[in-house]
Image 1: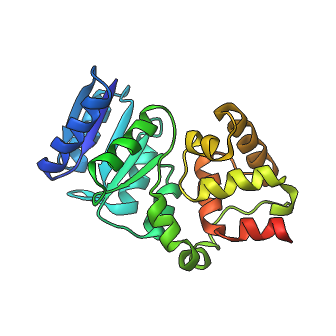
Image 2: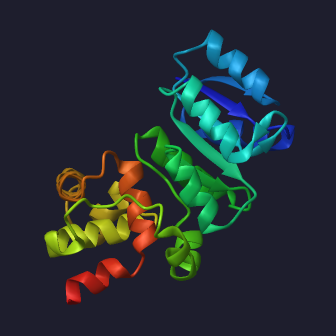
Length: 223
């Protein structure tokens, strides 16, 4: 497995390398201090399996950098590593198709759990930030959320609303399955149904939609 770590602080890169190697013994790890170095590595290794990237480093201007990255290398899964602990940063990163968002303030165990999820093909977003900020952030984030074209949350079953609500709180598929005492495959089926009913084209769109609605998902079930 090939992983690219792009961050201008060597201490951060070294810490992430140690965590990654604890999780996977056989890894080819590449490092970049600037966006241009990262782009050069990606150009030479189009089969990179995962990229960890800081939102703030030379040549990488936060979301403009993410947009450029997704445009030039759309097949490379991206996880953001950031000092920002605001739900708006999480939402805007999700809009660019990232599969994870890890705050730099996270402790070693939290970082390891997040990386374990993305290495397993899941997504990972900081539940503590989403839960702390969602009530205030939901109003600001509501406008750019994907519109369920002619459908509403009332089209979902109770179980589908449960899955969507937990997804919006930053739970992984595995964690949702444990919470609802169902199999991971059953959760994927429910999520697929949610995405079809609400016309959400991928899991990132579903996460963004769920985060932006916040408590409205549960309220729809009571309506």
